[in-house]
Image (cartoon, rainbow, N blue to C red):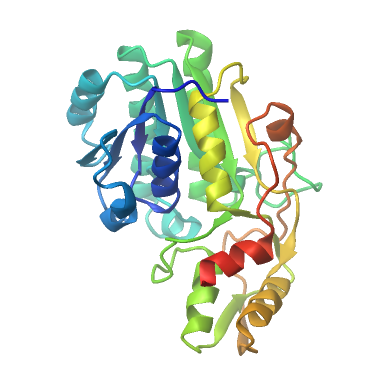
Length: 314
């Protein structure tokens, strides 16, 4: 599916999704320039490919525009995958200035680097948070946008920046709207981490779980290796229309069902405490992936949730 030997610049490459994406790109025969400032990423996440002859790793922040320009000029990428970001709803509420810099200004910087260095494709990590609480399910790409947090708003405005660069400068841009990604390397120690990694870690430590709300809120969980394959295809595949894509399985799971499944896998009955909902949290989330499938950004079968959880807990 993918033409071989492309040069792909990846920001946020030492993070959870970024490291799996780098591995997938290398396995597909591409050259990768991996950039990360290790703010939330971990260099150990790339340990399995650290000595790969097609991998170059640079540790600095995308905020360092001059250095970003320099490495892009030297590497001459065919595409940029922009995964570096402030990664949580709560952190964007606590630190709105960081949200602006890391989720808005840096997107503009990436687009400018692409424009100035003749990079023809940019793949951007957007989020289902742009939709807010849905007025209909499943959510398709045309669903109204009503973000509930600075994080969601930053992702939505970033999509508009990308679209302007597509219209005026001929850059193919892909806004990948991640729903709830889970899998190995998601840091459970972070208060901003995904619910699956936090729950899995606490169950393994025989600790109680905390649910914000009644546990009936739903999420569309997608396994990280499936996401990495989609990102790689968006960066390298021929004849894929640019624009926004929902990155989801089209299946919803309540948090209570998630806890039940984790308990079954681990043969435990975790104590669960229910607390008040958090500001900015979405109640229901279920995506439509019809556009994703129709344009062949993903082929095959999505990892079933229980199988993915077993992989995570193995």
